[in-house]
Length: 324
Image 1 (cartoon, rainbow, N blue to C red):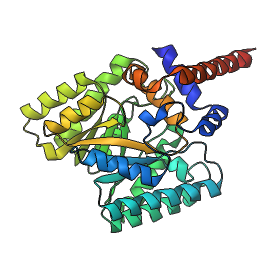
Image 2: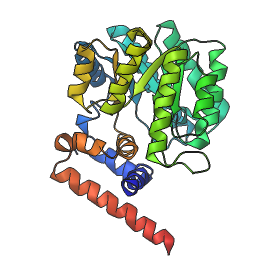
Image 3: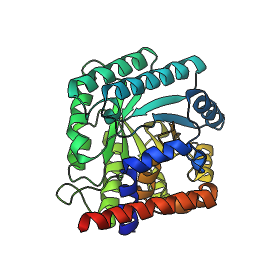
Image 4: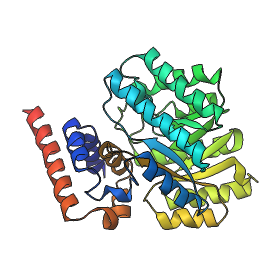
């Protein structure tokens, strides 16, 4: 599994392969996990999920943003989604990555972009979630969150269980709405747990602590063992359903998503959209290689297998070349 994780993370970070995937669009079969490339298609998918008692968080996909023009374009797309959510009165909020809004370009530039987004969302009473990325972007993202929280209350973020600092962070940000995940990047042993068992144990610890002490907890997992544990935990501790939700990715474990919603739990589907889907999809496979089994029948056809195979070959060849 460790080899697979490294492979998928390497593929997600390959700019050439990301660009090539854009060229093919969603024809490779990724439409099963990315419902659309534009706002109109995404809103229709949200309406379908809402009709089944499922809320949504919308992610405008984007990788490798190093030019201000690209960040401004991404900001415009997110503002368009916010307007569409308000206009169509759908049950949805926004998830975004600070790096897409210019964090890798200039801190103040990114802060200004995020403030414009949060301000518009606040006027419409729409929640904005700051997705957390790799370690190098972690503290700057928290800093932006803290700065904006002095003026706005419609923001929250993500705590990644593989970081040693996660316990400290979840206590520091207990008054925020938090999504708790295991983590989807390859991090140094200096900063993060490497062993799956340790990550899983910390994940459960974080979930339990925030359920008991936090504002609102989004439990992002496809793992039925974790889900069943949470069900028992909230029952034993008399935690009401309005204090938490389960979250899964669009296209993954669809039957379980519907089952949880039908059982009366708050359920939120993470809905990504756009042509820049490749890095997102590879990180989902890296996060939990078992995810490959969840979508393989839906997503992978002969053309997809060929492209993924070529991508893997290109990645491994690159690794071998760098070692020489």
